[in-house]
Length: 377
Ligand code: DAH
Image 1: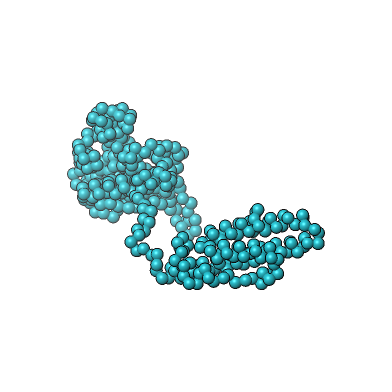
Image 2: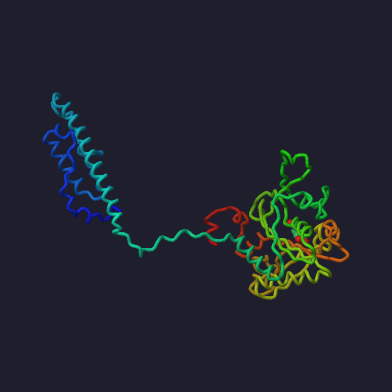
């Protein structure tokens, strides 16, 4: 609106119509009346607010006509100065009045024209709304969920504010166990009605606590994965965050062995990388598995398998996940017959996988919420 107004101005109402005289006009000297008429002619011809602002600048602005008149006052004979001052101010007032009037007319005109529907082009495209995209952690989580569901796993969820018993006790990590030192825990202060219930609440330090919830709720045989946020009181740097992501896996059935664990991990890697990936097990200690392992994968980023590259720090192996056979005591604590059933579990470092996948070198980007980072995905 307001850019192409010529059609309205050509209408019979314009420019024949004269902007109405203001009450102060009759008191103006012939010289000032001449200025006023010139301003009126320009205002009448104005077709936009920008035109009106230019007129205002020329008359009422710094160095404009009114300022010139006022500046000349000291040069006048003293008896004329008062009238000259008043005259200049009246001129200013009269011009402001006619600019207001013309502004209102232009606006009314624009509204009238918009109502006719002229100038509306339904074929013009609408500017596209800004589109968001999935967070890289979400994309990788969904991809892994797809793979594991295709392998017969259920996807489970669990609370982020967790009980000490699920996060530690029932995973064979009692209060005085040194393994707790590995988990710098955020404890929650319990107040109000729950205060005396002796509930020890914390922000879960790993997704393994959902293993216990799964064992409580599902009857074996079952296979589950649990993606989710976990929290540790870390000093934050490029590879440590207080909030990060894991994906837990737990399978409980009759007759499971380490062979099944290796098979599951190799199937998973084959799906991710679309080829066979060699794995190796190193011993690892986690109180809720026995035996426990660190599972490494032959670096999938090396130009040739085994060649070594920057990602694997030239070792040709990347640490994939800690894992192991579920400790019989852990099964028993959750009411599962450990004579009949065995299980394996693994804890994928989801944040680390995302970083590997997209070659992100600083974990702080993941939860930082910086649009410049996020808009690259
Ligand atoms: N929950 C462990 C941690 O965050 C990782 C882990 C180790 C998970 C062994 C497992 C496992 O499921 O079997 O340190």
